Amino acid sequence: MTKRKIFIIGLVFLSLMSLIYIFVIINKDTENTTTGITKPKLVSQYKGKYSLVFSVDRDHFNFPEKLPLLGVSSSKKPIEEASAKNIALNLGFLGDPTTIDDSIDGICYFWKNDVATLFVFSASGVIRYDTRSFSESPNKQLSDAEMSSVVEKFITNNNLLDDVLFQIGKIKYLKQIPNGEGYQETDKKTAVLFEISILPKTTDYEFISISSTQPSSYVLLKQDGSISSFQITLFSDINKGLIEYNLKNYDEVTRSIGEAVLIELSGDTRLLSDVSPGLISNIEISKIEIAYLMEENKTSMQPVYKLTGEATLSNSNYKYIATLYLPAFLNSLP
Image (cartoon, rainbow, N blue to C red; front, side, top):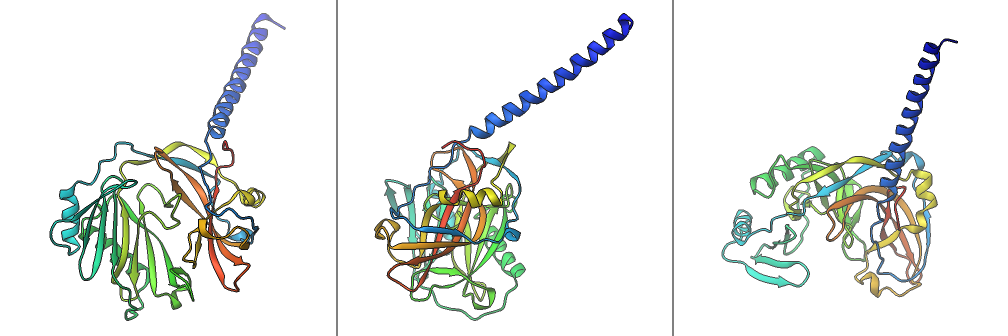
């Protein structure tokens, strides 16, 4: 074998080894980045134990294999009083607000009239509107597209959000909980309220908080298309991260279901912290969704699985609606 051939073979070997080394380093960096994400701090206010059954059919588990973190700008500007007054005027509230200085939410501007109440939370950028009483309205049999159009026009006409910043998300059909407080999901035929979620343009998933299972931005419509209530959260500069991380698949969710944290028990006026330990005997999960979790003082949001099902209480035959959160990233630190 000539020296030239030996040289070429050696050069090819070195090139191959270099490629292998680069591949290993990239994979190692990606793995380290993935496992370096800390799990969200989920704490249940219920201190009892219960059996948890995951009854979601595998065919209904239609989620991506990977998702990125969402970055949230830390330079969010508070809503000034002048802007809050413009919002109130557009919604039919006159005069100056009552100013409330809350220890948790900071300055809040508050209005009320004979029809509704309005809260504008300056620091968090949350606008909350509620009609003062609920009554069923004529059913106009609005299609989902018509309801989405009503909500989109309501938001833009009242200058709540710029149309380039948001999109219409899912529509949930709600009925009043029998013998209980609040509403639960149902089919369109029996619904008396329609919850239309509002999403940023940057993602197709709802934003939820540690303490509330409702989306951070939504509008509740009556059957005639009138507004029952809404909550709009003003976000600034939400960006998708450059790296996508592995999510738990169906089997991994099934194996880790015991890590799910109970967040809410609908249909009961008591707080979870007031529910006696041992009162909840069983929860059967029948629905799973993905949502991005807003954690306080965090500049990024990570996806969680939002689990919903029926809870059995030892002192009642009534089935309560339980909502739990399960961290969605496959490799995350405790």
